[in-house]
Length: 138
Image 1 (spheres, rainbow, N blue to C red):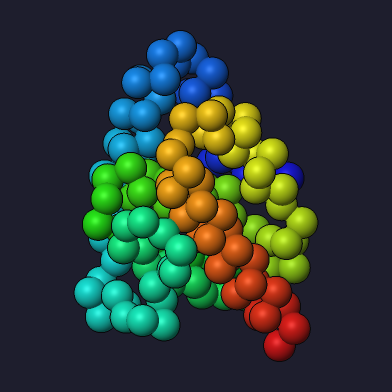
Image 2: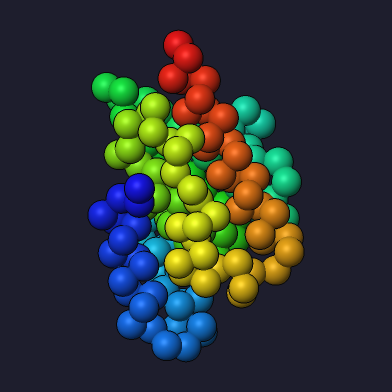
C-alpha cells in the first residue's frame, strides 16, 4: 500500500500530460531532497548495479523504515526521492509487501527510463527490501 507521499506524486503525475514535464518533476523532487552527508558515501552504502553513483543509508526507528540517499545524477536523485516517498514511514515488516513495480508503473516510469536506469531502480528497490527484511528478522 503506497504512502500518502507517494500518492501525492502519482496525483501530480496524473496532471502532467507531457513526459518531459514529469521528467522535470522527478528532477525537482531530487533537488528538494537533502544531500547525503559525505561520511555516508562509502562502499557499504553504495548500490551496485546502477549506472550512476548511488548511496542509500537506511535506518529503522521504532519499527518504522526510513532511508536517506544520494546520487551524482539529477534524475537518479529524483528516483531516490520517489522511492523515499514510497517506503519512508512504512512499518519495517510491511516494506517487503509493497509492490514497487506496480507503484512505479502508476507513474509510467518503466516506459520512459533507459534499461540502465531501470536496472538501477530495481537494484535500489532490492537493497531497500533486503535491509528491511534483515531488520525485521532482528
